[in-house]
Amino acid sequence: MRHCLMKKLFNALWVLYWGGMSIFATADPVSSDFPTIVYWQGAASEARQRYEAELIQMLFKLSEEKYGRVSLKTSVRVMSTERAIKKLRSGEMHLMTAPFMFGYNDEDAVIVLPYMIAKNMLGYRQLIVREEEVAKFNALNDRKSFNQLIAGQGTGWGDIQVYEYNGLKVTQASKFEALFPMLQFGRFDYLPLGLNEASETFKSEKLYLRGLQMVDKLIVFYPWPVNIMVSRAHPKIAERMDFAMQKALANGDYDALFDKYFKSTIEQFNGDEVKIIKLKTPRLDETTSLPPILLDQATIIP
Image (cartoon, rainbow, N blue to C red; front, side, top):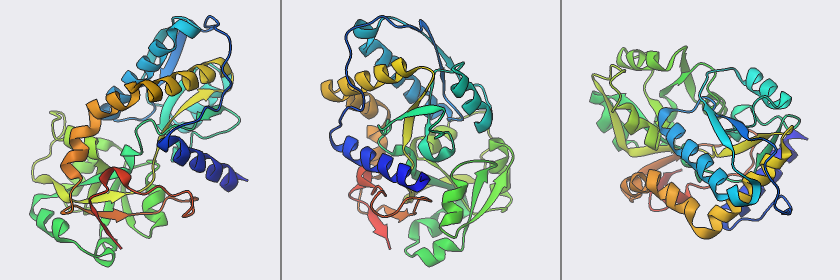
């Protein structure tokens, strides 16, 4: 049952990526029943938080004339998946943005809008490695060699299931900050972060990154779309977000915002000198797996 649900959702995601269709019937203009909206950004990195927050703000603005003005309260409070689902089920939290595969896809608690709000950008992973091994990673040309390497991940990260599903070894750290000294001391071989997340990490003054460097010729990719999820206690907000996404797709606002945050990064990596290690996502078969179309000039390592 769960597999069928996920297959249907990802088929919808594929269709919507190329043009879109509405999953909610439009209604007559009404005023919002929820003047204060609580939006939670999950465990998103700072790089993701900025984009997703601006997107949600834009969607409420685009739907303001039809549904009324709201006061948007954005929260980045750290909480477990179970606690987030509980708050969504009770209606205390109105909506959130998170990877669908991360464990928040409880169909009894949330309405998942089938839009890849970052065009699967989070599925493209740049590797942070020890600087003396950058050349080795850039020269890597076969999966067998890559499979012998160990990835670093934070405890509880949803991506762990992807790496283990593909037969890769993973070493975990209880805190994000702890991953960097562990990599420096050889506890694992590479730390995969989103393309935009990796570069932002190196701008941080809070982290000690001496002796580490980003790999620029090898990317790891797996389907990992981020969705808007709305509490089932607030179906009118789900309807509103669907209306606004349709509007943003039609008038170009969505593409403009995406390009503002990601266009330069995509252009940087979309060349035939860049190689891609493509992984499979658990519980998705080949008919629902999404190809790395943002980097369509790169070479996929078989």
